[in-house]
Image 1 (cartoon, rainbow, N blue to C red):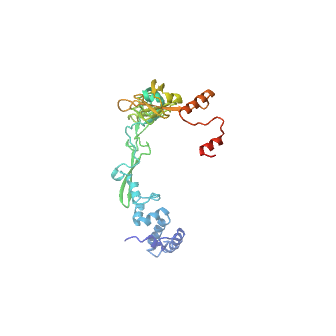
Image 2: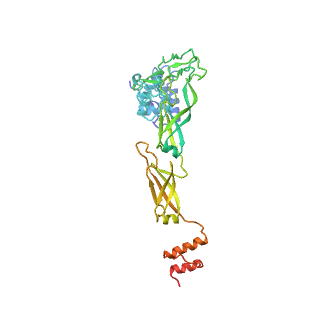
Image 3: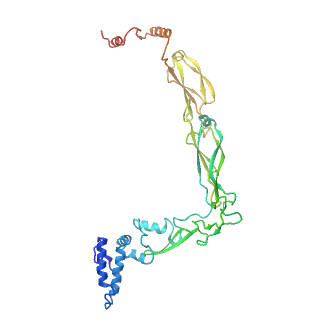
Length: 383
């Protein structure tokens, strides 16, 4: 015979408060208690029905599941399936199946999400940030970096066991590193897989630990690793050095070392891609009459010709004097930008010569004895 609705059994509404549920149960329990109704053959059956309804509706978690799934949820409880609190925090059927199946496993003996690999594991990759100069980036560099990392213990060979002994197979999981848990639920019988509590998923345990690594199979060491930096690298370039990362686990291969390049700013040169830019100051006379200048480059010095009448900000290109192309042939250029510098102080003789130059050029620079207000009047045509 189908079970009656628990709310109907207690005679309360579905939104009844915990106090209302408790009050209704006490009333019905006194009414149907077998010790009070020894002559009523149905009293015991009714009392059990009332008690079952109260047990479910007085427990917030079980009541929530009953409101969602009805008696199907309680069948799971009664079969030793869901259990009080098993659904705490879950939102619906998707979360329930995720709990059972572990994303991909769980049904029919498949592995769940807590499964840990018991075979060889590759070691972790390491990162090292290396700061170099612009010259190093341009010409390349061979250097060494000191790397702290985990390495296989030489004393035990990575087994973690005392020399002369070896790890023993876990008797709880028989070396699988996993334990299967069967659940009878309203949806059927489910088998979930979890990491073995006894061995932590390794499938073995160490009876006598190695004194060097304390059973971990690895020790911490610092190593000087040779690094060859090719010409043309820039900030953010990443160099991979195979096999120089952390040691693998249970005989697995080591990880890799990644060296991240950071190029320090230069006090003279500015890099733009594979080109180099440098600013060179020249005087008014050099700009006006033209000259030859000796300018710095990454490989020493070079001479450039400044034509007469050169304006401030003019750039001159030196081909092939920049950064080598990292992936390809050739290299960038160097651009020399000239900046005409105006002297802050000049001598009386220089001032006289400049006024003579202005006169010859037809420029009106005013006289020395004119006041500022006189110049303003002249500028705006005031009388």
